[in-house]
Length: 335
Image: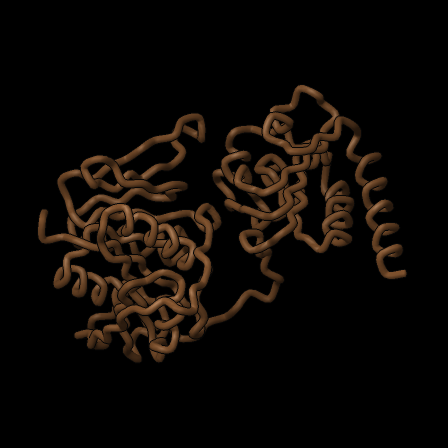
């Protein structure tokens, strides 16, 4: 066990652009590494991605391992698993962290199985205990409990972290670190799948995790027509539309908009909950918002317990009034 050291973060990138979730996790890895007195290391995999290494150092990495190869240009489970396992078996990290994204959820279990270690999925918090073990914290039993999981007898300790739950570290232009280029041993025969083409979705992506303002609708919206009012309020505020699980399951809006334990975790500057009761599963996804405004006609709705501002009233009367006030304020500001 004493041979294992340092905290690694698997860094996701798309077309030579770093994904925010990796920078969020890197900030947390920096905190944990400082607490343990070890290094925070970024593992950057792809093709022609070395130029991103300095950015990772500025965001908190002490060391960036760059695994660069033409066969790694596009993500494949076989290729990424092989090169990361080869590196981990050689250098023996104590912890490896991944984003709970489509790629992270595919890659992390494969690496965990190959390295015969444990994996905790969809963590919402991390810490280090008095014995130096990684505390992997996540909701359990439908969000009714918070479980703290440890992996005392296997290494590396591994976890995936939900996007949006960690605060992105501040960039430090003066930080210095080490960039180590790794020459992977990989051939085409190691990859059992072939990517013929990549087709991007034609529909607009709902980027809730990066939004500063979110206006969400729940069961109280009443139906698809009610979300037009939510959309109008979001538009005048320059925000995006979110939704509770109840609204998504009712078919009123697509799952891309879902906020909560089974949806997306968000940390906007402003979160307006319209017709949302405030079930613990929903709060798990938006409780980290800087300012929460709740609009609900039920004065006993649980959402008011966490709201910074509460409006008890019919959202179909309150929201139009808000929209008009915001429009008037904008006109005066421009005058």
